[in-house]
Picture 1 (cartoon, one colour):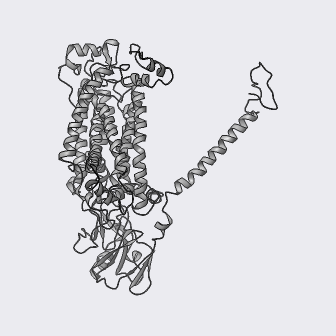
Picture 2 (picture 1 turned 60 degrees about the vertical axis):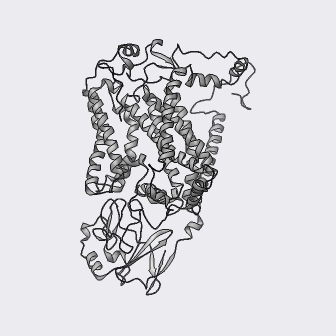
Picture 3 (picture 1 turned 90 degrees about the vertical axis):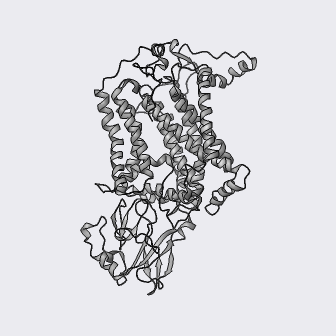
Length: 194
Length: 431
């Protein structure tokens, strides 16, 4: 092909000279450069398309929940929501605390003690997401009269994952304990989740 | 490509001649599904199911386009917009029941179509690409059906979306981030519903495109047949039109009979009552099950309950996807040069066992997870993978096939249909 600096006389085939690895033609350089530039541009334009599918600002804004726990008697639980996910707040009885502390950590799939999962001095308050770590069903056990499963905590009806009184996975397919969201006691009877 | 004796498109009408020299679309159709496509003369009714799958896709696209005119993809009103379609929109109930049951019909005919391919070895050389594209279509169908099931925003819709997107959280490291990105939130909500609607509208047209590739790839070697013997000459074939257009017409009639029985007499037979309850993110239904056509794969997902190197959850997800992805390797796992199971006495039995196991997995997928059911699911899951990874390679190397006919015509003249060398019975279905 003709270039400005290497005109091809009429009737002759385009020059092949100089088209080697050691001495690439200028036009190749420009072609590769132009296509690479367009490719990078396409990639950059794809980024906002991909990112637009991430959680929107209003979804992220639902990231704190304040709860008054004064009305929860020992042995009771309440269901609330945190980021539109179910949140379980459970007031453990002394027996439930003893049952959770009696388990050897070596026997656990996801070893954590009850103390690891509660606030210091508030070990009777178990705050977890009500989202089974298997595939996201809401476990039973927080409502009055619901099946608490073989370990007295929570029981997921979808695939029979059973959690103990510390919300730890004990049997079934779920890989980890029920998630404890970040939270703090803002007073003796109120918690702020998130 | 076609056989050299294929009939040539020769338009008589001057307008069609004018058209043919400018945009040869009629010629394309003539060569694809008209008299210009020579087809083996001995195809049985199992060869109807490709056309039936196409008919089912057409029904889904047509009813779906009209339903989309009435549906609102907003989490607050989606459920009520579907109820409005059922109660207030003129003939809305018909459109929705046709679309809902049309999905089941699509899967029924595609499962029979796949079983036909397995039994008669239609996945083998030189038709590997036809098979691979077919598996791609199957995967696209599953994605489309899942997202469509979410749209009514009932309890099963919501919890199905929660469970299925939960699969992605099993991926180590990036899983949870990926799940949140797919949903556009921490739980299925408006963002997820909207994008599922967008993709549910898009994917059927992608499927239609891949179907064109599927048929294109099929027309390079031409159709397989019940003997699995290649076409040797003109006497082995008949033109697609009018012979197989007529035969397919019979099948389409039966298809619409079954479809009409479902739509008009038992429209909710294959659905779940729970999906007539509006989605409630705080209450999981006591028993989450997917639609019937996903049950075998759901059973495989549930079969893994014990951590072994990797978490049980990850095993379940890998096995579930693997149970479909393994089909991509089928043309190379089955080394037997004989295509039709009619001439493979050992393989034929194993294939029937596989069909029974898949149906059993379907039952187990919908059953409550008691220890007995879980144990049986594990056995059936193990057998499913054994069939492809162990049984197939061993059987195809050890089996002594029955003598093949010299040609399709010879088989046809010896016995009706020519489906079996020993007796003239019509081929047994694989499922």
